[in-house]
Length: 296
Image (tube, rainbow, N blue to C red; front, side, top):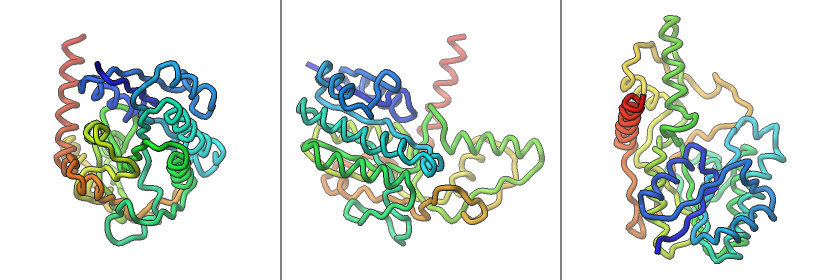
């Protein structure tokens, strides 16, 4: 009999791919998103889990608007901390495994080498602080939990850096203007499907706690933008710039590189290098484009 998975945040960038990949892996999947479910409500969350009785709850929901979090502190902590706590209570009550998605923003980004799961978390932004509190609340409530920290996520659905750079490059190209991209922040571009497959490869193991989960290798935003623009065959003048030249409400980590130490320790890390992950993404885009044309 197939195991039941409840995916919260099922219509988001990661959640939509998580639903698809879970179904493809043979799970019985139920997906919910806001306003169908409000995870900030304990009663609603616990009641839903009690009704579905999932073997696994995967939380892909979050308040991810990093700059907005700086001015919407209460909302950020409600969704990113209280929400995960409620899901942890529901999982604990039902004996479910809780899988939760966290972020590189729990670190300050000042380390000169990749971050491992053992590094101390000192977030600078409201977003990072709210996500860290979410991790801590889960750990205090739910025995069976797997927390996956991801970074620099992109996919075929939703808004992300890949789509933003393409749009910006096209606009600048038409105006014969220069596109400037930050070159002093480094991280690992990570395709959503890589995260989904890694999670599905991990949940069958009786391993709990925090895991870093990104593709392998690293680059700067400028480097990634160069690859995106080349793959899109857009002719535009691209120039590097510093973070200070583009001030934002929320501070950005200069180093967002995560090392998948625990996954590798247990021999279950299956993520690709970020370049290969991007190739997979481009291939999936092409397949989706062909399917859409044939459906018209």
